[in-house]
Each structure stands twice: as structure tokens, then as C-alpha cells.
Length: 360
Image (cartoon, rainbow, N blue to C red; front, top):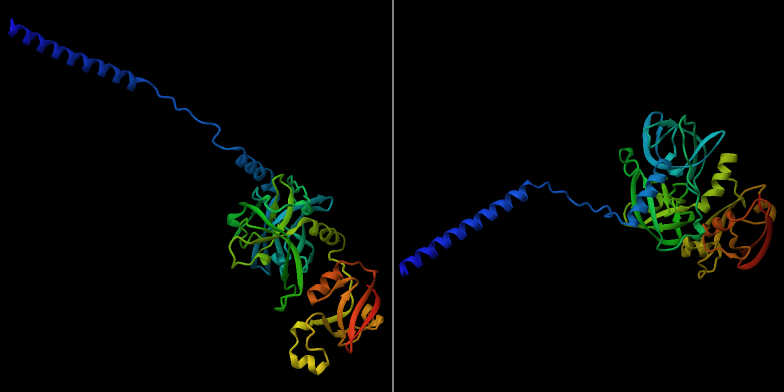
């Protein structure tokens, strides 16, 4: 009897092992025979990224590449924006330094078409140039934003052709890092900073070739023109753009006149701060005077000569604006209009004198 029970248990164990194997085999066949359908998440792109891609899609055809050459010798490349159009053609805005010295200018669109451009006008002080092209295809212009309402921390995009046109249409993203920044520049390339531009600061990447391209807000509006001349190439994450509100009146004058009309006083000056102690002593200037502009030349038949300004006068105010340097002088002067009557405060022989002139 005992031997029988042992044999029965052994048989049951073998049978149990067999059933376990068969069940496992059947399940494996059912699993491998089924077609597995993957589940895709169609919401992996969040709303923020979608907004960005929509803006790029909306605006990238309005950004162009600029190639400038002189007598068939390549000068350089840059970027530009489709600013507007009328019966005369399509207007492209870029930086003046992008096309400076060029005898031939070419505009490349995102559809692969390249057109010869006519230079309507340029302005070194604002670093703005206006080109005209005659495309045979449809071109849309940017909507112009309002740079006076731009806020620090606002998201922006920059589109352009960094390095060269092989990278045309490259997009960078950042924020407005600062507004109403004042940047000193040299407008006539003589090594002396003679003008201060009011600009927007951004951390969006701006590389050589991006100059003249757009700075775009999250509505797809043009709020500025980027400039590598202002940004320089020795600082990371520090870029600047000329505000669109500064550009509009410049473009209006370039379109109408081919140049920008600014009032003149008719003098050449030098910062008092640049004078040595010896020079101050020789000209009888108080040694503790560090602000103002020394008049070194007065041109004939100008508001300055008519008003009685003399060589070696020191200009300290234009109207109510204090003049500490030649940059201040030009900025104050260019904020006025031809025909304005202005009171100038000067120091002559260490005495303060007021002179009234009419700007031309």
C-alpha cells in the first residue's frame, strides 16, 4: 500500500509539471501571435512650444538674407526684414553697416529666390538702410509692433543668417533683458565714440550675419532690428536691437529723401574731459571743469556763427538739457527739428552766457 501511494504521488507530480508547461506554452503563443499597437501621446508638444513654432511659421518668410559686394568682391552677409511694399516695390530694412561700401546688394528670400536690390537710402547714425526689390512672387511684410510698451522679461525671437547665408532662417529665443539701454558707438569709424543709441537688450543669440534681422515679440510683431555692431562679439548672451519706434521715422525719411534730415548748429567740438591739465591751463579753463564741449571750430553762415558762438567757447546746455559730452550734444541736437529756436548756454572766459540760435 505504501509503495502504491508513493507511485501515485510521483505520477501526480509529473502530470502537474506537464500541465504547467503546456499552459505556459499556449500563453506564449497567444502573446507572440498578437499584433501590438503602440499608443502615441499626441500632446507631447505643450502650448508654449506650439506658440513659438506658429510664430516662426508666420514670420520666417518675412526675413531675408543680405549679400553685399564691391565690384564683385564679397564684402559680407547679413539679414533684413520685409518692412513694407507699394507701387515702387518691396522695401527691405537692414543695418547700414551691413551694406556699407557696397556697389552691389542682393536679397535672398526663404523661397530660394535672390534679387538685386536698389539702395533707397542709409543712415550711419541710426545704423539703418532701406533697400527696394522688385519680386515677381508674393511677399508679405511684418506687422510693426510698439517698442515703447515692451517690458523686461518679455519673450522674443531673433531670426537671421548667422555666420553666412548657408544658415539663413536660423531662429534663436530669449527674453528682453533691458529696455532704454544707452550704447555709445562710433558712427564715422574714426575710433571715437560720438553717438549714443537707445536700444533694447536681449539674451537671444545674435551672431555675425544676424545683423539687420528682426527681433519679434510673441504676437509675431517686429519690435526691433538686431545689430551685431552694437552687440560686439566678446560678450556671451548680450545682444542689442534698435527699437522699431526709433526706426519708423528714419525709414520714412529714407523713403522720401534717400537720407535723414537733421538740424545742424555748425560747430566742431571736443569733450572737456579729454583735455589734459596743460591744455586747460593754456586755454584758461578751470582745472576742475570736467563737463561740457569745447568748441574747436565754427563754420561760417551757420546758426552758430550767426548766433555769435566763438572758438574756445564751452557749451554746457542746449535748452534745459545739460551737455556733458559731445555725445550729449548730438543727442540733444538731433532730438530737435529744423527751424527750432534754441537757447544755448556757453562758458566764455569763465563767464556763463546765453545765446539764442535758430537751427537749420
